[in-house]
Length: 318
Length: 114
Image 1 (tube, rainbow over the protein chains, first blue to last red):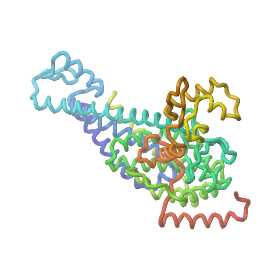
Image 2 (image 1 turned 30 degrees about the horizontal axis):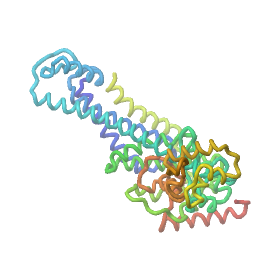
Image 3 (image 1 turned 180 degrees about the vertical axis):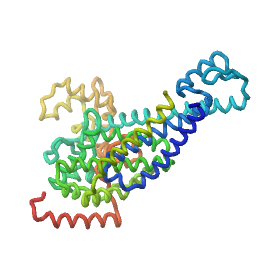
Image 4 (image 1 turned 135 degrees about the horizontal axis):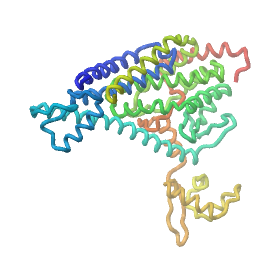
């Protein structure tokens, strides 16, 4: 396939992924099998990023017949040996090319590389920021937190409002406020701990990080915001499911409801108005358990996810 | 830090050691810890003759607030990417949740709950 055909195929993948993301955000099946839905979200994100970069590279090298990445490396050699005005595509025909075409191709090449670099940078910056924020959290916890027999293995902070969260990483911690200890009973506290432990064990923070990064990088993008919110809720539902293996549903539901109806924290300025319906959705799902998707459907979803990512990777590298 | 927070004035290493009655810490240990706290910005110090006097950089409440608000992303900055258990809701959603709670508690009274 020539570069131009590659670009066309990847454009379809990119647009298809964007449409798929909108559809997935509004679908109701994800709450039946949150893990499968998260996998699909991850593949949509990766595929659309790779496809967008690949489309631009394909437009820059429309006559290339080998993998786009190798063509880009060849272009580098060509430019260095002074062949700019007789851009050698793929390898073979040399001829004069109108300046405007050369200009457009260079622009596409630059745009593709800039997009790739930006996406990589966004991920790296978000990871670094998260690590720094967690380091600060850990330092503060060392100063301020203490243990409590009511929540074995977790740390308690003297904060009156009900709050519970986990600090992921190599030295992970579950943190619970004094307000929580006063609000919840023994079984409910155990359910909260089980839920947070599931987050830590399965490293949901790593699952969520790319979506957090994209949403911070493109805050005005509806797709990025929807993706982040959807994955955040699915991750909570996944942790709820894991917690159910250790504690009865009643305790978890009770804990959720008490948390949800406790005195609210002041509204954050400029933050995402995080899904108000999230707590209700989780409670409803726990009270009336939904049947998980049939195995065949889950396998089909995994195949679609794999295919979505395989197409741009093949076009770029093979 | 607790010792520093409990007093209004600044303290020397010796005075801090004296107040740490429950733990038999060597003088050098206390000095090292205070030094590290100052370097990390949690304690401020000023010279008083040949000794340093230490005081906390901010109140305990300030740090607790910073810790919890950052963790719960109340500052609008979600860099830490922490997941919290649940958030508070209001209005009709809260009422619906309370109704759900009554249903659960009604059915839970029969067994030994919390």
